Image (cartoon, rainbow, N blue to C red; front, side, top):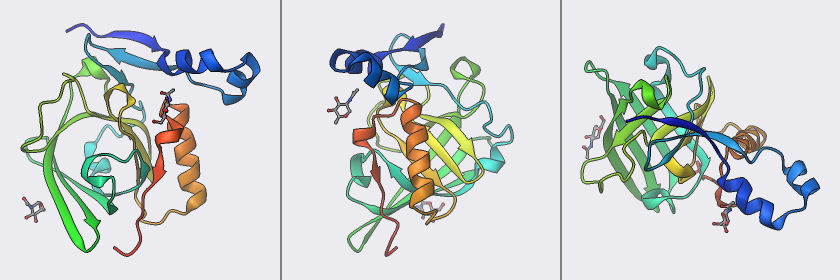
Length: 197
Ligand SMILES: *[C@@H]1O[C@H](CO)[C@@H](O)[C@H](O)[C@H]1NC(C)=O
Ligand SMILES: *[C@@H]1O[C@H](CO)[C@@H](O)[C@H](O)[C@H]1NC(C)=O
């Protein structure tokens, strides 16, 4: 399938209707690049995502993001990634709801080049409904050694991931700003609780 690079103005279109020109300018950005495959819009992956996937493996704590599904009321949301010999990634997501621990094990597959050269994966969990988007559902928009900003198609769900469980409010705030600059909807973003784990 041919993938066209387009300028994705959906956020800007809505904002432009209700904002004066100078307000739009103050808010900055709001027009971000996307890929389109006829069904969905995909954020573009960070070109600095590690070429060697091993560097991305290990533990990531979700410190902010868009509440979604079973993690919406959960705390201590954590992901463990482990490279398999087949080149896929074994995913173990854990969280707590009250005293109850929840676990979801899945597999992530790096996607082909049409969707970007790096940082684009498709994560699948057994029993999950079919994904309406043919492309990746885990796009690392920004990667640094200590954090990652991850989005899904159509900017539906944001995950702000940290190597440290408690990176501090200043860093989390900065990372959220970056996610907003990359097209995430600020009003929908919440900090995630990593206490009493
Ligand atoms: C952002 O999210 C809020 C809350 O869901 C919604 O009301 C608003 O329309 C969204 N903004 C855009 C630009 O989509
Ligand atoms: C999920 O994966 C972890 C670590 O790989 C394993 O210990 C656990 O038994 C698995 N749980 C389920 C429900 O498959």
